Length: 400
Image 1 (cartoon, rainbow, N blue to C red):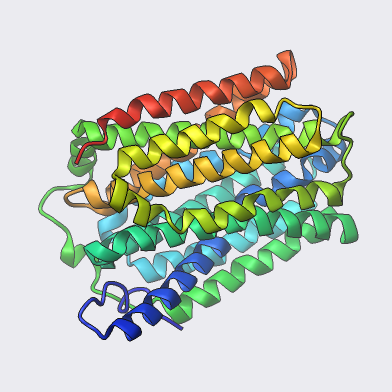
Image 2 (image 1 turned 45 degrees about the vertical axis):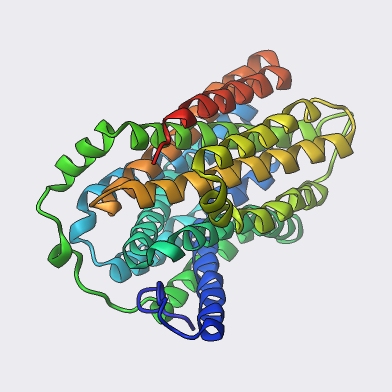
């Protein structure tokens, strides 16, 4: 397997060998991302079943399922501050091993409160691994490879949205809700095994720690208008994404669409185009510039919004495809921008970005859930459109 730490950014090698290593590196990076965050959105595929199981409203169940974003926001911020002192390999490995514990306990959660707390614990573990991996890539990638490495990681994230939901729907439909969570706990442990064999020990981060303290670095990052805008864009992107793909599940199972659980899982093939297009984000951003890339991506997402208001399944699915492609492409471009723009303490910058990103998911669930319960799907989609417009305005500040 390709070693993420020692084989990333090797530019002075034969072209054929370099291309093979880059391809293998991208595969490993993507698979690591997949196994890190596969729990995050997979549970959304069984939201209607969980709502019936716990006897609560769609907004309450949606908030409980997406409470993991709160844990991810907190962990991203803490890991970002402590990043210079954390060994990357050890931190990622422990995070994935610990993640299997709350995942398996979800199978027997007695009520919504315990379920919510376990989702928060999942978020703490997922974000720790996620933030440390992004910091590792930012530190170990050469300038020419950084864009493609970040795009590969986000592509693995996209794939987890598709495959994770399909697995969740299939396992829950065939074996029941409990076995769904046991299966995902096994995937978490598989991620730990992958990290054990693909990420080797690198120089301890405290030895490479710049003179400025992590807190001072975070303050400096917030003072940089470019990074501040990028943090805001991340907030808006997950606000829009999680609001859409949480509550569209309830639209799909209700008349006139009336899909069953397995059909609901198959719907998430809408993420398949995103798996392909997100890989191109780094290359496109390098050629067209970050601002143009993000604006184009947000425009694609915006075109999908009115289609999701249709009563025809084909048009709804097309809208979901466009919104998925647009938001993931914008996320990949923004993530790469943060990694390349932060002058030092990139772990702190990545952690701050992820904290804002996941806060956007939590706020989006709360706000759009209230809109959905009180005013319906049209109001929810309008809120998503406002978030995309805000991200487009913030993009003006992303200057080199």
